[in-house]
Structures are given as C-alpha cells and as structure tokens.
Length: 333
Image 1 (cartoon, rainbow, N blue to C red):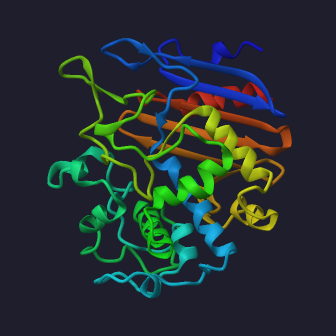
Image 2: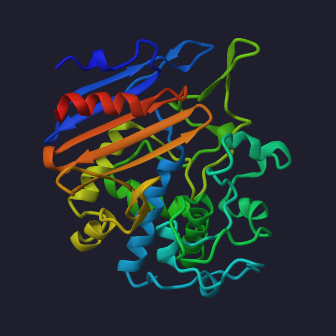
C-alpha cells in the first residue's frame, strides 16, 4: 500500500503504522534542526504536548492497584497546601475524567494560543508541576465537581502533584521507573528545553510577518508537567501500547476500565482515563491520545478490531489528524 500518497508533501515529522505487530509503514520527514538541516529520523525524540496525560493516568492507576490511592480519595486529604476556593472534595476519579471543575490554568474553551500564558508569567519559571500553582490557585471553580465534562489541564497537573506527594519523588522520575523503564522506552522523558539531550527535535512556529520559522522555547513550559510535555519516539509509543495492552503495566480489569467510557460529551467526544475514545459504528471504542502545543502536534491510536496502531507526530505543528484520518479511510474502508 502506498501510504506516501496520504502525506502532504510539506509534512515535517514522523509517521508509523503497525498491524498485528508488523510494520506497514514508518518514515520521517523534514528537519529536527531547521537551521543546520539535521533531518528527523524514526529515532528522533519529539515533544508530544498533552499526550503525556496518558502516562500520568497509568501511573495513578498503578498507585490505585497497589493500594496507595483510591478513586474516591480527595485532594483536600492528599495535598498539604491551601486550596483557596478550590473544592477540597474533588476526587482522583474526577481529575482523571475531567469532571472536577477545578480552575484550568489554560482553558482551551476560551483560549486559543498557549503562548499567551507567558505574557505576564515567564515560561522559564515552569520546571516543575508546582511552578504552575500561581496560574490557577487563586481562581474560582469553573463549575461544581461532577456537574459536567470539560477537558482540563490543571486536573492532570494536580494528579502529577499527588504522585509526588505519595511517592516522595518528582512525578517524571516515577513515570520513568514505573512506565518508561518497564516498557523499554529508553528514548522517552521530560526534558528542559534549555537542556535537551541528543536526538531531540526542536519545535517550530511560523512567523507570518517575518516569513520565517522560530523555535517554541518561549511559547511552552520549559519542562513538562502532569498536563503534558513528554518527549518520545514513535517506536517508544508502540512499546507503550504493547505493554499496556498486554497488561504489563496494569491488570486486565484496570486496562479495560481505562479504555472504557468514563466521561465525555457530544461536542468534545468520549473519554476514559487519560485517553480519548472514538465511538465506532458497532458501538465499540477506539482509544487514542493526542497533543497540540505551539509547534507540536501528535496523535496515536489503536484500533483493536484490526490490530492496527497509527502514530503521527510533527515538530512544525502540521495536521497529523488529517493524515491519521486519511490512513484510516484507506485501511478500514
């Protein structure tokens, strides 16, 4: 099958398609470093924005299975700082399912540009999840807990803080120990933009006024938080899916819960724990996780009926959703 025909000629990033464990297509395009014309490869580590929520969700579910947390534990009981007007009875499950009503530091329903956050609060200050507290602690609740579903970045920042409180270590170190190392994801981690390791792609934004690209180092958090920001490769993402679906990270029962509908709405779609769910014609669900930041776009989905895994990532913010849709139309027609 000629998958190249579904990929725009100016696409920059990487795409990988696997079926029943066999690679159907894997190719990288464009540059990881535009100025020096260093090409992207399948080994390039790409930023993934909000896709990192799936790792935080798995870590929380691991702690629940290990008896260190419970779905109905509340943030007022778990956290030791002043929550101000935030409801202390918000539960772990409400945070996982975006039904908490906790004030969102980046409310995507009213804000379009993530880099607008840093007009008054420099992004270089964001190197831990707790560094985001000033952006939401003094805000009112968005709605009463449990009232509705609304995608919420703060909820996963707080989940990251809860991991740190329970495990007494940075959340990303716990993810490395409990997920990345366990899966053989040796090219995945949370890195500071001014200290990136080898083989990391810069992410680029187009400046229409100056007709040139610039990097996103002043447009996103310097280091990822519970809300997202992991760097990874397409091969590591495939290792993650394999370990998850083979119940190496969580029990079969917990994986089933994670990939089942827990919340959602008609406008935004259905949601499990850390994953979006696309409802199919036979009423089954196809899980996927995705992310979008200035200069970053990512999606990875697994269609169980066809045993097919599709991952597309771009370090120029290209339309990975269009590519995924076109590939699915061909593969699943």
